[in-house]
Image (cartoon, rainbow, N blue to C red; front, side, top):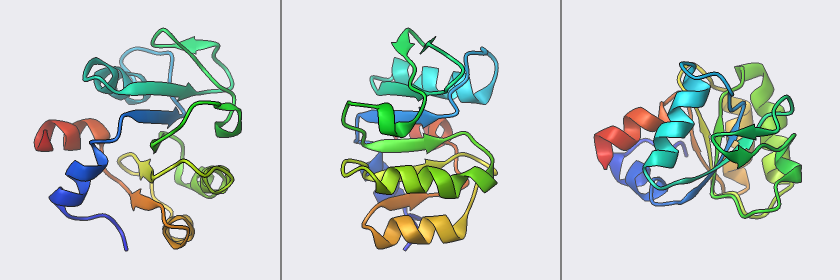
Length: 135
C-alpha cells in the first residue's frame, strides 16, 4: 500500500538517517541541494555515489551494500529504470524502513516488492518539499 497520507509522511520524516543514492557533488543540482537541505535540518545524510569520495563533508559510499551505518530511509535520485536494482540492494539489508523516490522517479513493480517485504515506499515526491510542507 503506497504511502499517501500526510500523517504517514510526517511519521516517515521522523526517521533520522537518509542514504541518498545518486547524491551529487554539484551544487545547484537537486541531488545535491535536497540532501544539503535535509542535513541542515538535522538529518544524517549518507551519500551513495561511486564517483565521489566525499559529499557534504561526509564519506560517500559506492553502494548501499558498503554502508555500515544503520539506514532509515533510502532516497533515490537515479532514473526510474534503476529503481529495481536499488530495491534489490535494500532488500539485502535489514535496517531500511522506507524507500523514497524523488519527483519523476517511479517503478511500481519494485515498489510492490519493497512493500511486500514490509518497507514503506514513497514515489515521485520531493523529500525537501514534503519536509517543508509538513514540519
